[in-house]
Amino acid sequence: MRIEIRVLGPLDVSVGGVSIVPTASKPSQLLAMLALNAGHVVTVPALTSEIWDCDPPRSGIPTLHTYILKLRRKLQHALTGRGDVTSKDILITHRAGYLLNVAPEDVDAVRYDRLSAAGRQAANAGDHETASRTLGAALRLWQGAALADVPTGPVLAVEALRLEENRLGDTHLRIEADLNLGRHHQLLGELGALCVRYPLLENFSIQHMVALYRSGRQSQALGVYRRLHTDMREQLGVAPSPQARRLHQAILTGDAMMNDPSLALNG
Image 1 (spheres, rainbow, N blue to C red):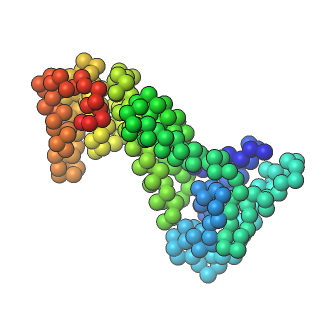
Image 2 (cartoon, one colour):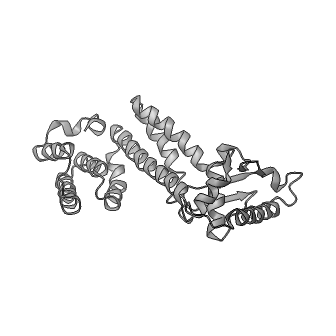
Image 3 (tube, one colour):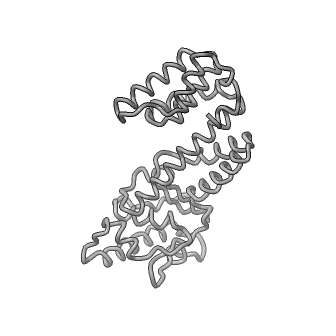
């Protein structure tokens, strides 16, 4: 029996290919909490705080038990004809709360974190090929924003933010590795889209400037800087960083540093 849990995008929990995700919002929050903590007990106070935003009603605990019962029914339906395993073997009641009894590697977020850590280690060691390959594999696990279709309370919101911030950081590092490997031509489309989506994130604009310059498109590289400068002035009231300004000057003068592979990492 295969259990698959996906939180890097819309919530998807399936048992043998049968989805057990509730359609109602609060039960889906409950399932997301259990999924992100697979193999660990999630306490009743943590669940009620998440589902009712730290202000559970008097009926909160009985309602929580009802959600668990309905979730077990969906589990049991998915387990029909699959041997001696029951829903209580997978969704286990403990004294303090509930545990989703699945292997951590069945959760895409766990696999992502492991690949991310390995890719960052390779990047820090200067192994650009391994960093690009490993971080690329991590990023391909994503199918959209974390928990894209689940309402988030105080716990899930923090976890979703953590995952999204790591995703952005890993995207930056993977592109750095690819720039160091001379793949600037292949990066132009991706970097252009990232600059449109995140106009105030300097890292992507800087990488786009480098990739454009190395592709023989100096004027477009300068255009990226002008847009960055305008956006930051108008929306944040600040100028681009010294790193971005130095890069801009290097492009203007055709400085040889622009073709130094280490520029991608060191600015």
